[in-house]
Length: 149
Image (cartoon, rainbow, N blue to C red; front, top):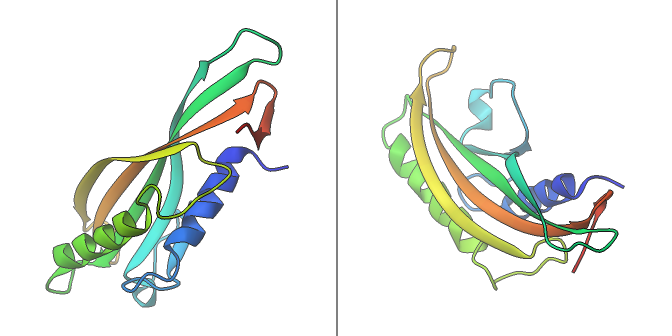
C-alpha cells in the first residue's frame, strides 16, 4: 500500500481538478517545464513533515503534520497574471474549506501561507504562487501506509 503522504497528495490533486480557471491542468510533483498550452496550471506536491509520538504503547500512534503545496502557475507575458493567480488561489481555498468535504485520510487541514514569485530564467516567463496547507493525519508506528482514525 502507498504511503499515506502519496494517498493524501492524490486526494488533494483530485480535489482541485476541474476548478474553473485550470480545469484538468493539475499535476503532481511535476518538475519539468510546462508548455504554453498547459497554463494556467496547478502543481500539487508534498513538503516537509513533522512526526510526533502521541502514545507510548506498542505500536505507538504517530501524529503527522505534512505540508502540501499548491503551486499556481500562469503566463507572466499576459496582463493580469497576478489576478489569475489570485483567482486560482480563491478557487482552491473555497474547495479546501474544512467541513465542505470529508476524507478518511485527513484529521485536519489548515491553510498556512501564500507566496508569489516571477521567473524569467527559462524559455517561458511564468508567474507563480505557492499556497501551502498543513495536513494532519495519524498512523501507527511501522504502518505508514494505513491511516488511524
